Image (cartoon, rainbow, N blue to C red; front, side, top):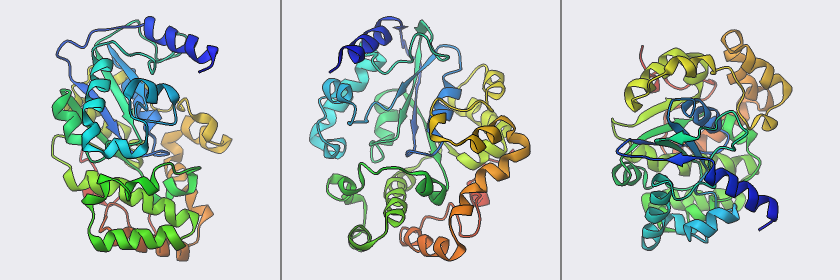
Amino acid sequence: MSFSISVKSYLKKYSNYHNSSNNENLFLFTMPRSGSTWLMELLSNQPGIKYCNEPLYLTNPLVKKYSGLKDWKDLHNSDKLYLMEDYFKKFIDGKLGFLNPTPLGDYYKPLTNRIVFKIIHGGEDRINWFRDRFNGKIIYLIRHPLAVALSHTKMVRLYTLLDSEYKNNFSEKQIKFSKEVIANGTMIEKVVLSWCLQNFVPLKYKTEDWAFVTYEQLVKEPEIVVKYLKKKLGLKNTQKILKNINKPSLVKNLSNDETINILKNKEENSNLLLSKWRKKISLEEELKLFEIINEFELDIYSPNSFLPNSKYLISN
């Protein structure tokens, strides 16, 4: 571990005093490139809330060190569940703070009593466990599979999902199909498969108490979504969220200038923002990729549309 990482970790930990009391923590589940950092930052604008960014990202050596989880398979290993429980309890009790916001950043608070955990690697098969074990509220964020696939730069867990206890959530037919895509598919087909594997299980066990949000509706109808989140999560100052809704996230380095300009004028340009990925793919390719999605009977999105199907939208 480098000296600079150690100093940064030390400053993050000791510049914040966290007292959770009996407050409900927020667990934001999604997958990479789905708007998770943006939503995490919006939620951490609320009084008393700090974020914990990617506590299960095992590529981070500090995550491995403090969690005791050494391999992606450990995230789905029942015998390792006690390690995950102890690890998250330390965050909630204020004993771990290496993933706190930096003291010099926009989202820093010296005193906090709730945490929004952004989890984009692992935990898909344990979402209700997180809710029940840690007095949590669940936010599940989902984005169009092709928008995600076309902006994805790496896959760290695709093979693990079919080589761990996680595979027990799928039929033999789905597992066979998945292995054929892994063996013979193109890169974008593999990313779409990863989207299916990571979303199929949570959607299978989703309950009414979850706050279920599509990225597209958050962009197009932020007032409706924020009102819904206020009710579901017990938020207080939602006007502050709406004030910051057009602010690009801290991962703006992954967006091009066009995206950043659209974000600043989202009301006028929301359809352009949400559909710009379609310039990169033909309808024929889109239909072929949806054949993968149909194998898992996931009906949130349909071919030739960049918006979710209406039954998955939050009503006003």
